[in-house]
Image 1 (cartoon, rainbow, N blue to C red):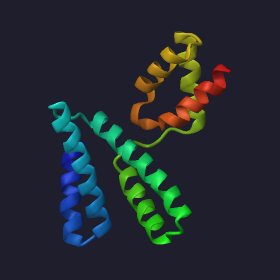
Image 2: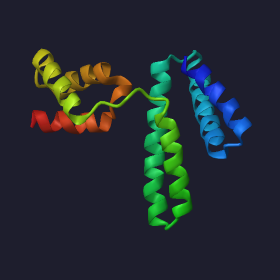
Image 3: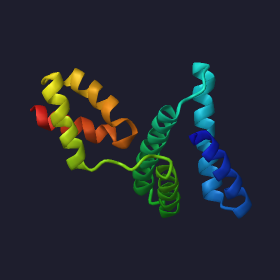
Image 4: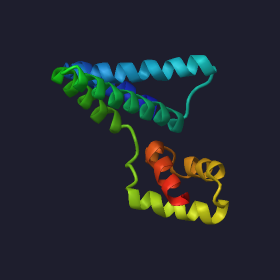
Length: 142
């Protein structure tokens, strides 16, 4: 399970004195624990991957803010955190692969964006950025 892998990585980061990895994994574990407490359940790997994707989106937005504030030190740290977080996600699909899945989903679910996006979310889950999927679906349907 992903949660056990996170614990092992936290231990190895502490032993190696890798501050960025330790802080990133600790932050991720805290976010996971928060959701588990809020929802009163143990999360599945897919739900944990969803949290990881959310963390990556937040870090990406933070990078834009750091660029506006001329903080290259924080930009570098956020990029390192994103690289660490991406290690816990399955390999991401390319745009071409996503477009193939979109074509399949549209052929079975019609041209209504709601049902198509719901089916796409189930089909690609943590394997693709849903913002990219949303953009590609809208391009295809318009």
